[in-house]
Each structure stands twice: as C-alpha cells, then as structure tokens.
Length: 580
Image (cartoon, rainbow, N blue to C red):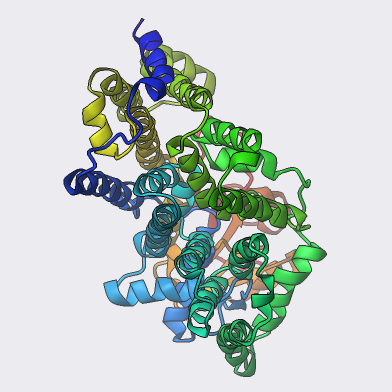
C-alpha cells in the first residue's frame, strides 16, 4: 500500500504542486545551492583515495611517477618505454597536485578528475541559468551530479573528466559571450578547448565548435567563423597546443615516440581509419543510456516529448537539441568507438532533461517520466531491503561470503531511498526548499543522490576483495635485498604493479623463452620472476629443474566466485642458477 501511494504521489504531484518548488526569496535559493554543492563535494571527494588503482588508472599513475622521478615532463614513459598515447597535461595536473601535497598515491591521482567534474557541474549549472533560469541550472547540476557515468569517471584517475570539463566550460563561455564576436571572446574559447585537447584529444575542440556552429548556423551567422578575429584566435591557440609537443619532438634524444605523430594517429587516423576500438555503429544507443543511469527513463521521455513538440520549442531549446544530436552523430561517425567516448553528451542531456522538467508543457509527459523514475527507485529500494532474506541463496550460488557491513549498507540504502519520496507525499514544501525544484522533482533528485552515493560507498567496501595491490605490496617485500637487475616480468609488466613497487629504474621484461633462459642463467644471484598465470605453461619447461617449479613464492589471491584467473599474478624467488 505504501508503494502504491508513493507512485501515485509521483504521478500526480506535477499536476497538483507549484512548479517553482522553492521559496523565491534569496534565502531559499541560497539553501538550495548550498545543498547542491555540499552534495557535490561529498559525492565527488568522499573516500576518493581509498580504492586501489584499477585497470587504466595505472598508466596515468606510473607515467607521472616516472616523470617526477626523472624530472622529465615532456617524454612520458612506462617502465622506461615511451608512452605518448595521450597528451601531456593530464599527467602534469597529477604532478602539480603531487608537488603541492608532497605525495603520490590514489587520492592524488584522482583529484584532478574530481576537481574537473566539479568544474563541469558548475559550467552545466551556469549554462542552464544563463539560457533558461536558476531552477533549470540547479536541476541540471543535480541530474549531472547523480548520473552514474559522471560519478564513475569523476572518481577515476584518467583524462576523461578533464576532457569533459573543458568541453562544458568552453560551451559555457560561448553561451556567456555569444553576442560578442571579438578576438578576446574567441581567444578564451579556444584556449579552453585546446587546454582540454592537451588532456585527452582534439574532441575537446571539435565538440565546442559543434555547439558554436549549431548556434551560428541557426542564426545564419556562420560567416563570422571566417572573419579574422576568429581565425587568428584559433591559430594562436593551435600554436599554444602544439608548443609542448614540438618541444618534446625536438628534445627526444633516445626517445622513440613522437607526440606530433601520435596526435595525428590518435585523433585523425583513428577517426577515419580506425586501427583499434572498432565497435558497431550503434553501440552508443545502449552505452549512452547506461552512462545516464539512473536518469535514462526520464531522459528518453524528455527527448520523445521534445520531438513531439519540436514545432513549438524556443530557439534556445532547439539549439541544445541540435547540438546534442550533433555530438551523438560526431562520435557515431568515428570508426573508433568506445563506451566512454560519448561522455561529453552527459552535461547537455542533463540540461535537456532539466528544461523538460521545468518548462511549461504537456504535464502528462512529465507525470509519465517522473512516474517511471518513482517506480524504478521504489523497485530498487525494495530489492535492496530484501537482501538479508536472499543473502544465503546469493552466497551459496556465487560461493562467496558477503561482509555484514555490505549487506546492512544495502538495506539502509533501500530504506533511505524511500525517505525523499515519503517526504514528497507528506511534506512537499519542505522537500521543495531543500532541492530548489518542484517537490516531485526534488524527491527524484534526492533519491538518486542517496542510491548512487551509497553505491559508491559500497564500492569502497568491496575494494577489500581486490587483489592486485596486495600482491604488489607482497612482491615489494619479497624484493628486499635483491638488486633491480635480478627482477624480471615475463611477457609484460602491469603499470599498476610497477607503480606500487616504486622502483628507481625500469624493471626487466622478458618477451620470450630464449630471453628468459638467458636471464635465469645470468649469474648465481637470487632472482625474482613475475608472470600472469596464463603464461605458467610457457615457463614450466625452464623452471622444471627448480625446487620452486609449480610452487610460486607469491600468488595473487583468487576468490571462489572469480571465473577468470588467467590475469592473476604469480612470482617465483629463484635461489640458484639455471643452465641455459
């Protein structure tokens, strides 16, 4: 009965409650803004450094560690090998934070991403306020903040969030100065764009230019793109962008990679003639909704409503729809596609959804969208609450033991998720002031914040089951007293493991059995050999004469529910010379 009432409240509230949803006084606005930015600080920064590095984070961590160790910030490398797959600025940002804090750990590696996410949310709020209203901007900020894709990459130490932030800030700058087509306006616009390009790639330039072109094209002012102020500003910032790459190219004694070549390869060649990351053209049709969770149903309803009302939309909304569609087409047209490439769409999908919720239109569509969100959240809350009752079945089927704190956390998150929707039904005025939007909208916003916040908190709990960092720290202890030249990785070395080992110089990597045999036969000193488990069969013949054959000194832990253990690490400590 409770659930039915709550769903009905969500469906009916758009009709029965005032749409301003907030005390229009400055005190009411200030309260709503404080709640938004407090939530942003908590969701973005709480426990940011508590998780071990995962997959691609190790590349940024290890490149920066080697930059700091060598004092060379123009020639990125991993284990002494050139690694110029990404531009320089994302590494420099981590290095700056490291210099300011005097440390280099998971928190430092992720701080630039989290700060960039905060900047992107601010820019999203600004665009909404500048073009529509305070309420549209604030609601868009809430939607973006509580989107899974946004929070996930904001809490990940890579360049993706810096790229997204630069795109959103550039569009915000254009929106603020769109009627001033002078050199200064274009110079700052391209400075933001090319700064973003120095973190990940030229998409940080292309996407804001699409925004500007969509606006100027609609106003029949595209000719301004060919005037001297615009061309000069773009040319100067292109030179600024190329400057560090040129410096790296002219000072690369003994360094094999060329940043300029890789800019062409990674940005131009990959777009038109992809050499990797080749996915079907339709992948963003399901990747984008997954990144927009839990807001996907409402975003889809908003887009359908805009399509239905397209003839009656104002110019600002038409521009935003055209621009968002152009982003989708731009990334879809690329031959190289990955799910997170489409991240730059998230801020503008958030604004579109906020415009839908806060504009005067067909209330039936709003009730439908909010009703779907209510239903989904209530269903999710119920599933979380019943976890203790099905926990024995889950543990038995997956052969795992769920920590008590994890199970209790799920139950509490389910209970807390019902609170905003309950308040919406019994105290709508109170909840409207908290969120700065209509009570029904605020209830959905706060429920999303609670669910996604506890999701990432539970992720910290599950990090105790991650095994790569404990293996690396055990390997570091195992290496005590052994010279770096007597340590080798077979086939390749994990950047994550290298970062945690924190060795002064490169570690040896033996690529085949012949080079491995030479390593094992090189002197009587104790040696350490590290390999992924999938390569053990290749090593068996060479290690068969050793007492340690089949008995690694150190093995990365594997849990019963892990089906694939081939990438788990093992390490042998070899005490005697092996005949080649």
